Each structure stands twice: as structure tokens, then as C-alpha cells.
Amino acid sequence: MSCNYADGLSPYENKGILGVPENFDNKETVETKCKELAHLVKESSHVVVHTGAGISTSAGIPDFRGPKGVWTLEEKGEKPLFNTSFNEAKPTRTHMALKALVERGFVQYIVSQNIDGLHLKSGLSRNYLSELHGNIFIEQCKKCRRQFVRKEAVETVGQKPLEGLTCRAADVGSRSCRSGFMHDNVLDWEHDLPERDLDLAFMHSTMADLNITLGTTLQIVPSGNLPLKNLKNDGKLVICNLQPTKHDKKANLIISSYTDDILSKVCKRLGVEIPEYLEADDPTSPSTTSSLIEWTLQQDYVKAIEGKFNAHRKATKTKSNHKEFIPKKKLKSNNDD
Image 1 (spheres, one colour):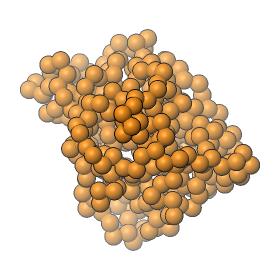
Image 2: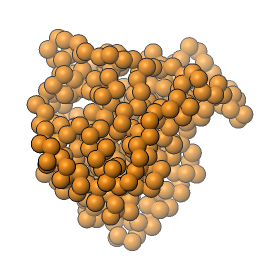
Image 3: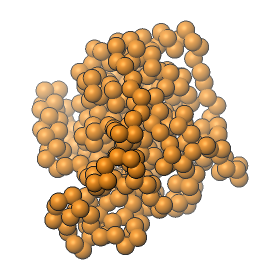
Image 4: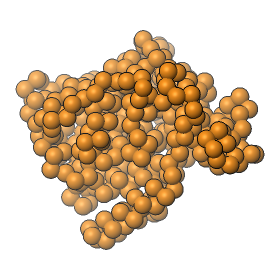
């Protein structure tokens, strides 16, 4: 559960602004704004979606800063209500819509702050996803950094050793680094973000002519600032969230509604059918192949995107280089800046 994940983190006082009331656009306004968003997506050549905890609440996983969020209730000495575990949770309509939009070429990349593994469960390809804060269904070798999919969620957070397991590379037909041990890859407050995921997130966000945020208050850096990286090149920003965000004034469009509803309307206007969740496409499902599945972002793929980024930088005369982007600590609040 989100609360179990939160309980496993190190103490950290400044978790951002908590419990701000939610706003809802009326039905007619949502319809009009979703029509506009569908048009923006259709007219854009590079769309990047940034997802937060708000896209998983309909799966039964509580968010963190909402009126009934984990940290909001924690401040009151309470625990959130929940009705599922990470193992039992299934991808929401939002997760399945994003998978379909990627496969149809309307969305080029997804940057996620979520550790719940629901993008993985949806069947989304690793090459279209940066997981900035880790994934509770992934184990990683401490030495060679290779990642592998688990059938059950890890019981620890904070990159702790997993049952003394050694590097799993040999189980997928590769040479094991031998001296490496497996650990969870869910970050704690003091950990740096994963380099390859962060590099790809930064480059895609900068190249995007449209960045869309879904279910996030954008309070955590660096992830909360990534959707702004395209603004200097006249890119557009759309924020879909029930609570106000720090970057609302910079947005071209703000939609205050549930993300499941928003993407259902957008997909309908784009002629994209949202598939149902299938266990056969879920690598964490016990009913799927028993073979170990690797989840590592390959360096040659990162290099290919870097080539596209450099070409984009020259074409737009952008001075920034992704290597100049210094990773900050995980889950640091914008209020700490």
C-alpha cells in the first residue's frame, strides 16, 4: 500500500503543501477542455506525459497530498482508507489509455513519479517510460544496475538487499557480475534519481512540443520541473489535476477533473480505443511466463535519444545540454528551494 511505502521512508519533515481542497470543472467545461486537449495532442509531434499518484487512486491506491492522502492524514495522526494491495492493484483506465496512445503514436514518452508498477502492469514498453522514483515490482543489482521484474511487490524500500539474492543476469542468459547483490529500487529521500531514467525524462521533456501532467501537484523536484523544460522553445504545458499546482500560471490549459474521465474523452476524440487490462500482458502476473524478464534501460537506446536531443538542440538553438542537468535528491519538495 502507499501507506506502507510511506512508512518505509526515512523521516522527512517538509513533504510539501498537504490537503489543499480539490476543484472540479463542470461537465460542459471538461468537455470543452478535453476537445482542446485532443486537438493539441493531434497537432503535436512530440507529446510527453508526466504521471503522479492521482492516476492510481481509482485503482485503490491512495495519493499523498490530497484531502485524504497518506501524508495529509499522517499529519493528523490518521491512516488512509484503502481497498487493495500493490500485488492486487490493476492498471486504471488512465494507464490503459496511455498505453494505447503510445502504441498509436500520439504520445512519445511517459515520465512517472509512481512506484506502484501500474505502468509496467499495463504492458507499456520500457523504452517509453522513465520511472524516476523506482518501481516496487523491480529488483536491481547493486553492482551492474541491471533490473528485473518480480512477480510480487518488494517488502522493503530504500534500495535494501533482497533476501541475499545475487545478480540475476545469468537467469536471462547473460554473464552475471557475480559479486553484485539484488535490492529493491524504490528510492528513499536521500537517494539520487536513476541516471538513465532521469536523462531520458529530461531530454524528452525538453524536445516535447506538448508536456501533459496527470494527477500530480508538481511539488517534488526535479520531476515537478521537467514539464517546464519545453517552454523556452514555445512548447505547451497542460496540467490535469484536482488540486492547484505551483506551475498553474505557466500552463496553456488546466483541466480539473479525474484523469480517467479526461483520457476517456480525449481518446474518443482521437479515435483511440482504450483496451481492457489483460493478465497476459502483465509481466508481474503469476499466470504469465515464468521466465525472468529484464527491465533495464539499455545504454544504446539512451545514446540514440541523446542523438535526437542534440539535433533538436541545434535546430532550436537551445543552449542547454542534458549533461548540465544535475540530479537532485529524490522527493525533495519545491518548498525546500
